[in-house]
Length: 106
Ligand SMILES: [Zn+2]
Image (tube, rainbow, N blue to C red; front, side, top):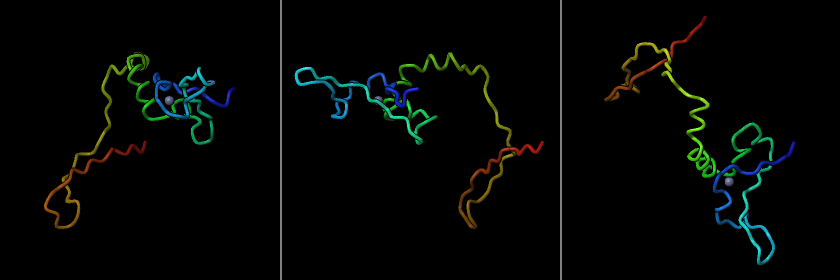
């Protein structure tokens, strides 16, 4: 197994930063960033994306494929107790809604 991944951002190699420049004089390129796998990024998306921008670009380019892979055909629901109107602190002039999930002790 390699100890690095190439960034999966579809436009990573188009970002004009000095660290992406490779090649010899007269034949330079901007290259996709190489991401070293380490204990902080292993098992996270940051082992495959060099930046939030590359992550977002990838998502924008491939979101339809992800939706097809993981379709949601029904809504999800979280059981809650009846919401209560509570003052955020004593003598507050407004109320907040206290919404608590039902604790399932089964
Ligand atoms: Zn990147």
